[in-house]
Length: 350
Length: 168
Image (spheres, rainbow over the protein chains, first blue to last red):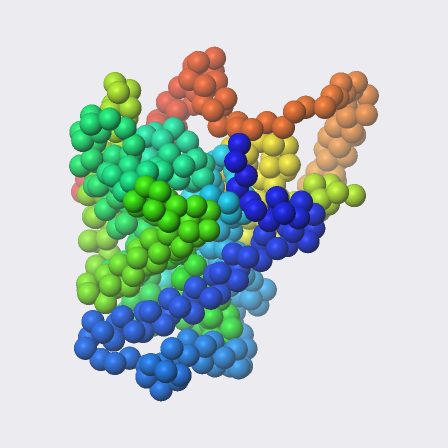
């Protein structure tokens, strides 16, 4: 089998290379978060016909750096009534949960930190650690708004995990693998070989193309809810809850929540890219195909999804709680079940 | 000492230390949060035993499902009823009987462990366990699997029945 981790090929497996494999995605997350924060500021500005930040660096591109430096300098405050240990632990748990998912993201055919066979399942399981962190932070703050935000956040996360899991499961049925690297390999070829368009195969796949496209949309909506983004940001709705579960946090701990949110955005985009948009494959056959170019394609596709998430955020208003539950349980769940059933039938009779 | 051994001792200590917190903590919520690390440590033991699917199921079901439900239950009850979630001092009678039971259980387990003839052999690395588990559940262990799922279904229906709005 082809190797999936070039660092281990070059230097062998020892303590140093393990640290390198762990540190590589961390560096990526930190740089990516800065880029995404800037993108958020600039795209919102363009949508609202403003200029956005213009004074820090040319066209304001150093704005996120300035913000991080500001957050680092702030006083580290622990509220008096809070449960100290849990309050201080929560940001770490949330960030570890978000960051742990990067272990199975196939950045290229030659780099995937851990090539495990149940990769997609792992991503869903590890998301629950972030949920624990949210409850921990919300409870430990001893603040009604924090607690209510945490409750809403977790109930939303649990509700929308099911349609998202159904969408992912359908692709697992179609590709008969949960390994994200193998799913990427299966989609090598042109863009009509992506699972968004029914995956590779003969003309009979036209029957499932409507279902796969529906599933892609369902997964995207569910992923917005899982990352607490507008229009599903009820847990942080500032008009009702101040800021939700991180109301009492400031300085570097708040920055960790912020980074975790952006890391989560990338994780769901990366899953979307891998299961629907061909992962690191070039859309045009052999054109710029290869391990090095794969990183470029993967990041390009994932960033496009992140861009759409930001675009949606600044376009749509917020849902009400009952609308959110209605959409999750009565629309997305039946739709994803029907699609899953149709795809399973197709795979059986193919 | 190689990396796997190091990882084993790290996770073993983690699991045991937080299990002790679960048992000895007076605050129920602290105990529940400590359970997070215990479950996580057990999942790592499964990983070290090359049972990847089982490890991830452990995280998914115990941390993602059961633990979140426990914590929700505790948080919501304290906020509604205003009862303090702290356990009282353990009585002397309970302490003594629990101590004797623990000692007996530990003695039995250690006895079994030391007297059993363990036939060890080099096992080749297992590549994928999910497929074998799936095949096993739908062929050889189908009856047990279906019985368990029927039980869960009945539990769900029962829970919904108890929690429903009573007709006024």
